[in-house]
Image (cartoon, rainbow, N blue to C red):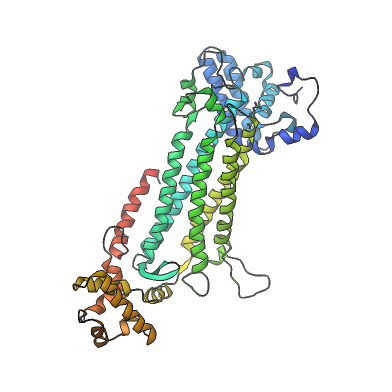
Length: 463
Ligand code: ARG
């Protein structure tokens, strides 16, 4: 019978209907079908390579599996909850399609090494997609940074205006966060690309399998060294979700800045209408829904990370059914991260940068007070004294409602004779920016040089 459970031999009673529903994973693990079939084809090839399957049987099995893949692609596959999961659904269908030969596919294999292999194959593609989407966003950020390399903007600490920066420099900070995320993901990919297949249920198999041969067929770097570990640990999935959580942290911080910047008091950028929605009651509202949602979705990825860590922590070796719960968090993390990266890559180039407002804010808040102190140090004043004198200048400016450029030289010289006419060069925003011309600094020339280096650096991801 097509829907009879492949493991029903030792059972005398049918599975309770509620239990059947409770234990089945096919409603979500069907997403693995392509990778499951890929793994099965490699397994069949390997079995024929070592003489466990005839070449004729191998070819019939492969053809059957390919036909099933086409059926699923076309939406013509009847998934069955009684058959529990993606693996047994496909195997049962194979037996229906090709008959007795189909029953030989599972020789020397277990669903335990099968599912661990499937998930690694699936996540390998997933990680590659996330890296690609990250690099796409990085490119978009670099293009904007290049356009805004000379644009003065306020730099903050404690969300108080601290020192002027160039807007391009700020954007390059976003670039760096994402660069580390992409690096972490490619590091995760290295550990992920190890093949569990051949571990069978837990102890390996009595057949003369050639694991290196199968690994090569599937593009794995090597077979896993230990069969118990291979079927049991999901640390590769945890790493992926952990790397994703950190990536979402970065997107969430960027989102928070976009929400602030597009608010009326800041008014530094305007997000395009295509990335905002209105209010059903307040006609004037244009809300930054997209960055808000990315910020909000960060929470669900954190949740998935905690779910996976908790899932793993109590498990004795080797496989336990707990591990079936690894899939939904992994899938949802992948969807959330890819969706967030994609929407960001469209939103950033379509927003309007309000340069005058940025420049005005950059000049406010006595943002060049540090430059005044640095100037005094160059005139021979010790830094602590220079700090004190610059502080007094700020006090005077606050009391007389002026900024530092509006205090005249006589007043400055009353604070200290060390100040000369040339102080006004360093008090301007342009002067302040230009002075920070070391590696990693905010001066326009440094930003331009950093962009060139950044473009070189992301070439390693082949985009
Ligand atoms: N659906 C199962 C999972 O996702 C496949 C492995 C089942 N193995 C078992 N011994 N019940 O983990």
